[in-house]
Image 1: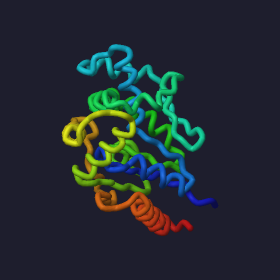
Image 2: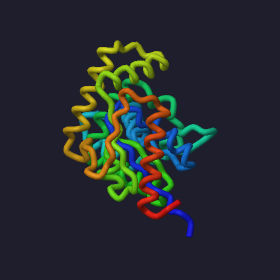
Image 3: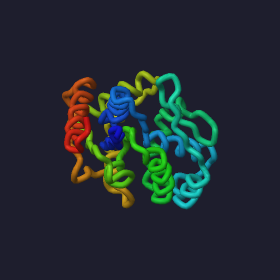
Image 4: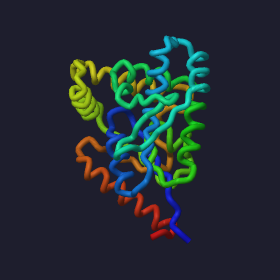
Length: 230
């Protein structure tokens, strides 16, 4: 019997390095990488383009229900497609990030996208990152990690990313956005950002990418050993 391909859930706040780490881990394990945050960004972008008010939860829920969001891997890169349109490059814009924070707090939106995420990952062999993967999307995931970092470390990382994209926010403005995102994510009624009781906590503030990935590989190996897998 072949070894079971695991569901690996990586949760954590904005700027903790989830996307970078999850992608690297998926490559090492030859698993599928799934960025759930990109799905909310894609829907936020569509809302902005279609003129759907971010203050109208009912309309946002309806938009989520009729939108088809796909994650595809091409040339080693995750592509985000909504209604047949590749929006990978557009969803990184600061205004989309801000809108996604609002859109993702709408219960009807989360229900629609969680159903999609479960369908994508139910067969296993996935590294899925977000803010409620281990608590809501896949509470039965074999490996759960809560990846964290200090607000200062996260702000510095996000500011560097934004600078490479040509945005002009100051480090202070970036930190203010991070803190506000934390507040929204942790206080929303539906699926707030919390650490699952059985998730391994890992602070990446002083760690390199390679160090974090190696730590996660050890966590995965230990879990496989518990399951009696090679």
